[in-house]
Length: 544
Ligand SMILES: *[C@@H]1O[C@H](CO)[C@@H](O)[C@H](O)[C@H]1NC(C)=O
Ligand SMILES: *[C@@H]1O[C@H](CO)[C@@H](O)[C@H](O)[C@H]1NC(C)=O
Ligand SMILES: *[C@@H]1O[C@H](CO)[C@@H](O)[C@H](O)[C@H]1NC(C)=O
Ligand SMILES: *[C@@H]1O[C@H](CO)[C@@H](O)[C@H](O)[C@H]1NC(C)=O
Ligand SMILES: CC(=O)N[C@H]1CO[C@H](CO)[C@@H](O)[C@@H]1O
Image 1: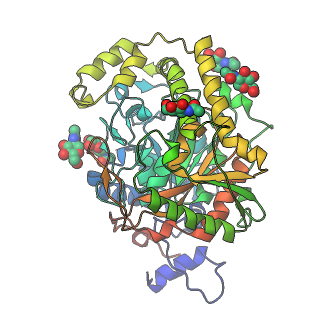
Image 2: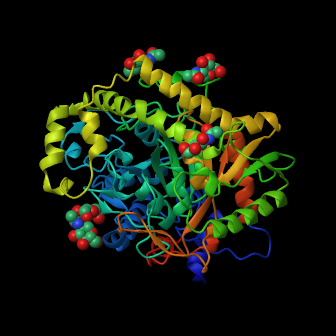
Image 3: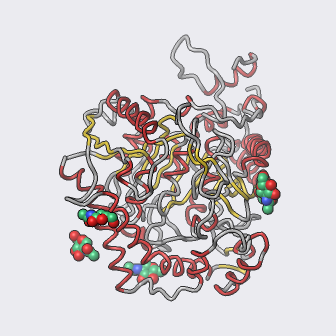
């Protein structure tokens, strides 16, 4: 983009450190870092008020088609104006001062917005307290711009199209028309990718950050369960639920994680964190982090899943091999590994994990939901919620399955019982042995695999996963719809993600590896969304 001279001066004000001879260009909101936005704000080249307004315009320009955002806060502009005043007066609240962020509709906010986890029924009762992660974002200076669309109840409704909710309709990905956004943090993935906010927040129970990050060409961090507080988050399976960022780049994800991580007396899973305080994730953004590291590479082909055939397996394998070449360029030693227990096909282990998860999932869901709903006003009882879900036309009970939430609201499964505990520890033991056995036996520093392959096995043991764009399916891929015929699940142009996995609390290592891979591969910018947005930074730059 060529810049008028006055704008050029504004850009120069924040890009003083450019290599000599290189002309500054104004980044698009589709590939700017939070740090760059912070420099623009500090220099006076933009204001948070104008930036917030611009993000709202961008949301409005694509939302009729993509349904990524459920609700925009009417208070966001007022908050932005106040933060602008504070900045001018020299008071910065924290590293996200004046930065607009969109959050999934399952985070409790106490403002003008509802919290529904996609459900119109749940959204009619308001939480009395904010989710801990929302309070932390606000304390760091962030503007909570709105709520993103998701698979209803974070995928807990039943068998339904990923990214669909009664509150937000069907979310679509931005790279292929009618593209699946994957789920359940669908709107967060799409919004991060299109620059509808500076960053987004999602939740993951069994792939709900990893998968949308992959399908939307963005970075996602699924933190170790317990690193981030789930207090005030509409739960799915509390033994597996975790909160993490979805962003355009690894640096932004590290920054958001740094802000939201830490112990919380309202969520006793966080008390398991090692050390007095979480480490600094922004200090591990080192492009040489992969040098000399032994990285186990696994490609899950047909053997890994029970489903008959992964579509476009050969095409995915090719993109994955390119990613391994980039990892080698970054200095890693690639060690091919086979996942699976001695003499047991991986598909068998996977299905054993799945069946055990189903033995505690419903009871866990019910227990977590009951605790969450205690804080609602007006009060909402399980039978009232169930009645509403069955009868409110917007919930579409007659056409779209809601068997899981229906069963959870009527369950008599004892989530705290011995049977659930045995099922949980069995799922954890198998998953840990399958994923971490090779790391131990082959003395590896971490694993990489195609994102879709890791979601199930990382779920029960609550292992961390960092996902980075690795390209897209090529023109020779076959197009395949999802089982409901509502979205394109696979086909040419669908983005693919590379996931880094390790043991609990290994986020520092994984973020370093992901950053290093990102710096070498630079895949995000190679894909261009079909959904174009005209409104960009140039329209709000001020002369400084
Ligand atoms: C959902 O979106 C589709 C397509 O954009 C539209 O035809 C339909 O009316 C919407 N449904 C609701 C309930 O708004
Ligand atoms: C953690 O908190 C939950 C609900 O607040 C409670 O049921 C459980 O007993 C607590 N666990 C421990 C180990 O304190
Ligand atoms: C794996 O599962 C298949 C299909 O259920 C079964 O036939 C086979 O015996 C199992 N193999 C092992 C080693 O458990
Ligand atoms: C899981 O592994 C732990 C530690 O190795 C062991 O004590 C426990 O008995 C195992 N649980 C099950 C259900 O296999
Ligand atoms: C912000 C926004 O566009 N919200 C829309 C999300 O989708 C629902 C259902 O389609 C609309 O009613 C909202 O206006």
